[in-house]
Length: 223
View 1 (tube, rainbow, N blue to C red):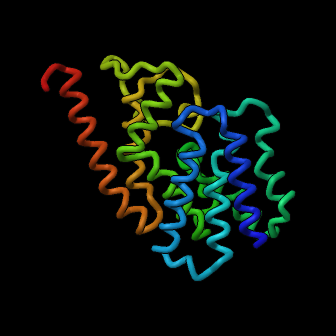
View 2 (cartoon, rainbow, N blue to C red; view 1 turned 60 degrees about the horizontal axis):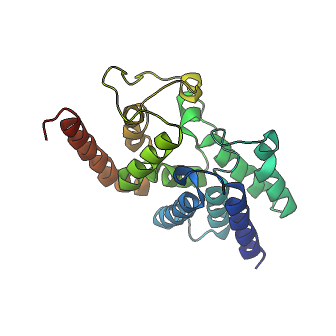
View 3 (cartoon, one colour; view 1 turned 120 degrees about the horizontal axis):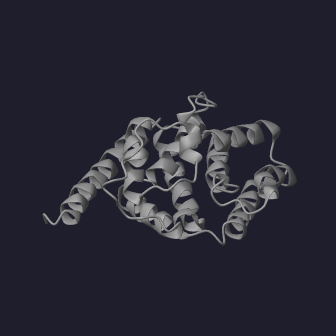
């Protein structure tokens, strides 16, 4: 019962903290990631451990609160930590949840630092978040985010950055929405950690490749 109450309060925090975000990083994104994470966790054999499932669900629910792309006030960076403390989440679980959230971003992988890959729950939650970044929904989210930042759809003169550092990725320099596919989204399939995530990523990755093929043909007047 206590866990169920904590989940409900986490959902309320998500809705409140992410209310002003565009649709690429809103509460509906979080619900999809939560559902994917729980499904992957079951496929990966974690469902027999209730603590693992609780860690997966809470990390998935809280993973985008305090995202640097949307942070409006420095105090938002402490929202997750404060919430876990207020809810009395067991210390070992709290540490794992925070490690997962702090280490699952693409920017962290670019830095080459493996923060918590030894935790089975980490790969589950990270894969779930990355699956929502690719495929049909990933395409929709990519253009939604680009539109919210007034990015150009495509400019053949602006080439994708092939060897990105964490600092370059986080820099708010002018980039096109299409280049984001090459700089990040098309790389995610190979970065999946779980077997369930890898299987699901195949179809979504192929869908993006077909989309880009059609996009370039239409852009050039060949279709």
